[in-house]
Image (cartoon, rainbow, N blue to C red):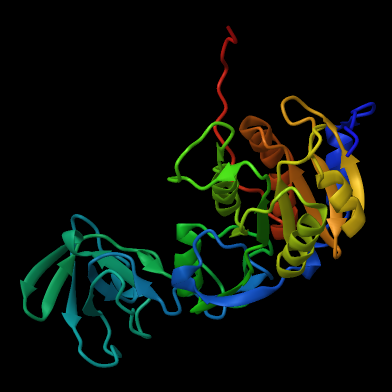
Length: 336
């Protein structure tokens, strides 16, 4: 086969824009998962609170609950006595003990901290300050009001989001299915890790690296067996991956060597959008489509493959999920 030459490389931004334009995120399915299993998943639809949180008036301190108006007139010089009640609290100057988080009785509208209460006997206390209505009371809906928007669509669920979902009455949540990324290593020279090495044999580890990136960026890698440098076999493997996955990728075979077949195989299976991207390393990358699915041809050189993964595959998964993948820290450094 004739060797290929890169007479015209597509600028990275242009290649990425054209490639991503062909991706339809609406084709990605959704599923319901238990809230406990939803960490780092991406919401498929807006989530609204089913119940308020708290869903009752709750004491915010350990102490006594009272009617605020019964405390008026109490000062540090003139105390006011209150009588414990166990039922409806219809008597004037009534109080009942309450702990943090307990429901405040319907007749009460304020809580006084236990530190501010003087115990006279089992049923009588004395207070030395008046309090305003709803003092130390967590009102219904203080955190979340029923029907309120809790989380937007395409939101990455964090640990505290899971608590908010449960508090708002949800035990499951609809999330986007992890995009499936088919990974096809190619080359007659490949051997599996652990096999005996001989001159010319290359240990295949690129698929492991790319699979790890896919998981990190919210996808599910589907690793296929290596394919020899044969156009018919490569096309068959590509079509299978495109049918079974949301994204198909081919490792190696994208450069200008005699057995670099990826660009021709992609063109034959669907559409070739770019062969050669103006980025170093990573120049020989191939972008296209097959079976209506995006296809990425990675260079076999590991650093080039990683660059194309970061510059093309990462934004591809982000578009499917509608949410940015976790970012890496950046630092200033001097290049030697």
